[in-house]
Image 1 (cartoon, rainbow, N blue to C red):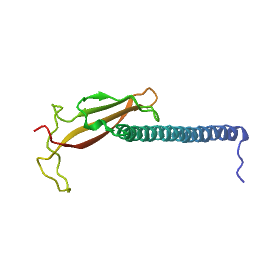
Image 2 (image 1 turned 60 degrees about the vertical axis):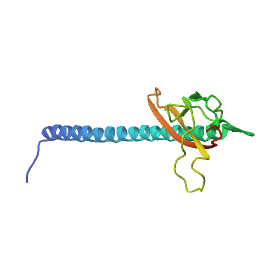
Image 3 (image 1 turned 30 degrees about the vertical axis):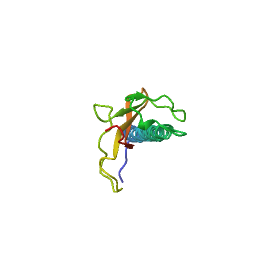
Image 4 (image 1 turned 45 degrees about the vertical axis):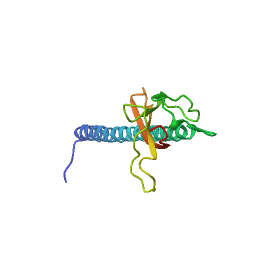
Length: 156
């Protein structure tokens, strides 16, 4: 029969239990760190989604606000202009600009509608909406829309 010394065994058990405790603590801390980074990433993606939705909503509201009653502001010539009428969402800036260097109407883009080429001209404008998001507003979302407003060519 083999006999073991109890004093030598208790030291071995103590060292083995400390090694297992350190290993389990390391695994638990890695799992907790991974879970907290997942929560942060999901929060950041939610902020980006909200910023994108606000930007697209501001773009839609800007297009709708340019037609007031019988007045179509896309048919005007005073571009670029900043738009401050967005009330439903908060965005950084909304700018309507003429795509061309001149504010004069130009030929319309190709369309499937039948019309005389010289009878209609177009005012081609772009709307740019930018919105900042993030912890320190360091990220930005932009949405652009191009609009070709048909005009009667009565001046030429």
